[in-house]
Length: 89
Image (tube, rainbow, N blue to C red; front, side, top):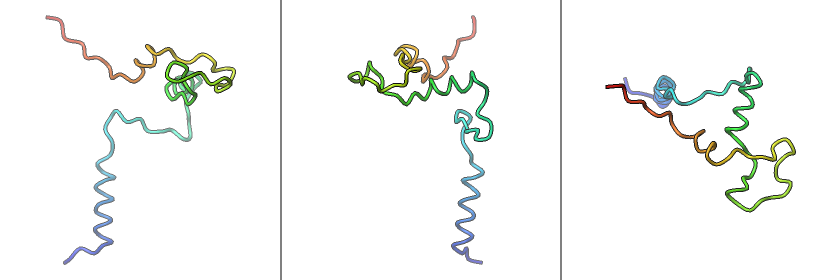
């Protein structure tokens, strides 16, 4: 029994759907964005405003509440993977 195009498409879609994503991918929560602390962390993590230490300052480029950007050291720690700790010997 030869595969039809419809069956092949269904098989590919099922295999992609069953494969899923790895554990490090965060799925968005559309219905419940979280409490205030979670929303604040997400806003800091995904800061859409221009950074003054990367390019020339844009006066008025940030809203009044977000005038101070996250420092470069803290920003680099947001994107680094957790460090593995060696077991004691």
